[in-house]
Image (cartoon, rainbow, N blue to C red; front, top):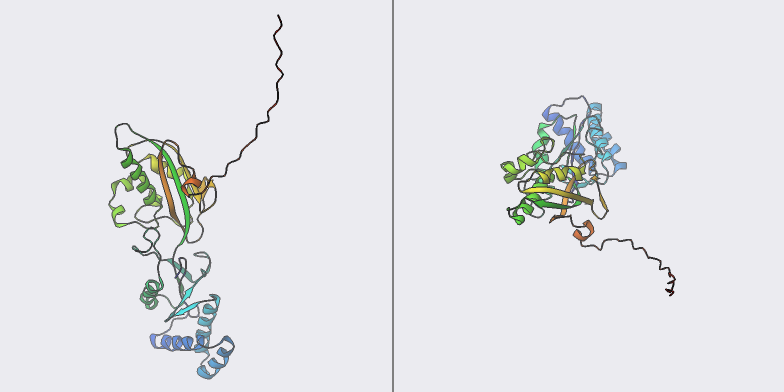
Length: 293
């Protein structure tokens, strides 16, 4: 499963509470109905529901929720949603979106991704505990690649290499999607991370990454005398003062440089040739007046 995908648990008709045995009947019919082509479902419900209009309404409500999330990839009992439904958390009554990020991901430790097995396990745990009138969407994060280049001066007498590494670690912890086990007890992180972006909670949703905040984080690291500048850039775009995060987007640091003096050019950090503008100087002949005796 790619990052940003997730699972959806549908809801029954809003405001109705079902007994466990009734819910099992509704769910069994729903699972049988979605195995059929859309044009065959009405006839199937005519045949199976008979005169039980309440049963039919419950199944049709589930089918309506199912059809809202198009192009679902089937896995047992749940559906994998390639697009967020609803698009933003809180924009649809009765729909709850949970952002799921595993603490450990050996393949991508800096940007953990919840795979289908992980999400399906959580779905199976939450399904019997949710309100039947609620649509529950479990989604993985959508990571936005960013590049960071900082230029610093260090206090005389301290180890330059250690300070540079400490600045890198502070910036990475500040931007981490969730806290690592070590960062929870790291006094340096707790001192350099503002309360609204606590290392214990991870990066807040919809919060932009700004060069000014990263500069402040770097300046609080022990041994840093002065932060000359911090450059940030999104993916292949030029550097900017801030990088917006929308929906379920979280920052992923693709490359980071901490230099002594001025920061490295972002294009150089990405391994690209910086775009330079050259101007041609026009040469104008100047006559030389000979000296006269």
